Length: 218
Image 1 (cartoon, rainbow, N blue to C red):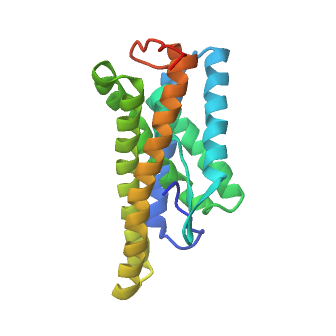
Image 2: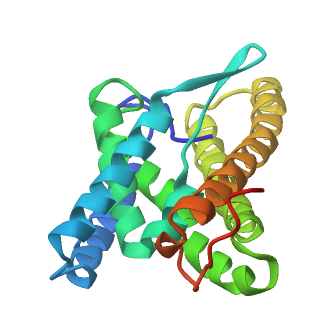
């Protein structure tokens, strides 16, 4: 449930064009928020963006299907709203150029993943002082995946409706997609927990909310 593998020409312009327009508007707003960012900040964002892109092209076998990690939860926590949206837009644009979804769905893909990524840091900050960084990042990632996955399912439902797919096929798709949705929440959350434990040990200053290092002997 990382991005929409929908080729060009499937979705109507009434669906993908507003999505692309809204995504571009959010990019402009994000650029204004990040105006004056230091070269070090831009390099940091670029490095995490490359990590997201790499994760999204790696296929994890789940029986007869493959799952693509997104890392939008952990990276959303580390970067914040404006930066994570830029990251997911660029990552999805690059993926579209190599055949992972059409160019027309880049905007929708950015909105689907960006919606979850934008929520990650607020959820993390709400949890970190009570539960600590690993659990807080796990919770933030779970929320990010729930939101992004729900939007993914909604767009897929619209796509099936546009294609006038019969009810039996819709049930078949739903029967496959929903378990994958749940599996994605679990997988991404588990990865986020490990990422947070690692960062807390080696570079706790990268985490928002005043994280403190833990003993490396554990």
